[in-house]
Image (cartoon, rainbow, N blue to C red; front, side):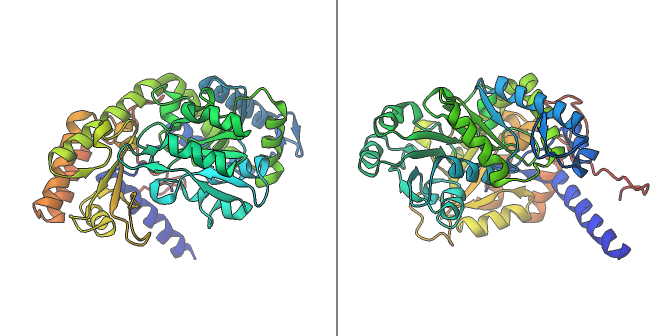
Length: 430
Ligand code: DSN
């Protein structure tokens, strides 16, 4: 058995080393700061603290209460809102909590289609299906890569959903929450924003501010543009205290028992770091995404959203039909040390054959890369996918570029090794 454990440890170490020499461009991933990472392996991991600070079902929770109170205060300050709950253990669990609190089975709920960029929570085989609600799909403006407001107003007036979700996994531009808010009010619907992808951009004040544009609830995971631990969060801004009560009881005992206290503590650190460094980080993430999108377009790639400058977020969508299609292109890029994911794009005929790849700049920005490095990355894409350069050569060049950027930025203890493996059992790390 000890050998099995060594194999597992070796695999994880090999993974860390691989990411250290690769250029990670997954839009939903990021790197945890050293202080946040440290708390993930603290004793908080071993404990239970069901309930809320000061109202627990277990003894021994005084320090957990202290940390959770700090976490809630930081969340409310950062997002300028009056309600926060940090008990959902992931973004999807946070979404389930909202569905449990604010919709009943068979209710119509407004959302975006998967092929237009929605998260799988909105799918009938995802959280929507689990709650048994019926999706009412918004109309999509493919050219502008956002919701078509006039057509969607008509759809909402016809279907009258009581809950309307705004949020995407292919999130290029702010969504028209402000524009649709009067229609939501007219039909008596609650506005709900899934801000998982753009949470760090909202925290930095560099994207839209959905809780002040017409949404009462924001759900999110906490590890994408907000470089926190894998966890979830609920935020709210409403004059109705009953809404907060419903969200709280949906979070616990609705969709969680214990809420992963180590991750909650790491989140508190990440929120404090977002207060200190979030604006500069968010600005650079977006500047990098625009630079990378532009450099790819200049090299003949079909980058979506051209009319609006390709992106106003951390994400870039590239149609790669002419390069061979999403799956083969993403696999070839990974072989060359450029980590992306295949992605459905509007107009795709089959979910099994996505024609896009999705790129994101959260992680490379966290490592200190700026616009000149985005051009170097675009050159690697061009050489690999348009000029038939061998994958091994591109992997070598990607590794050389990456060697200059393996230290964390935008956090306390900046400059620490980003991919460090914490070897705790007295053997030297491989
Ligand atoms: N599926 C994740 C993403 O990559 O967008 C979100 O949960």
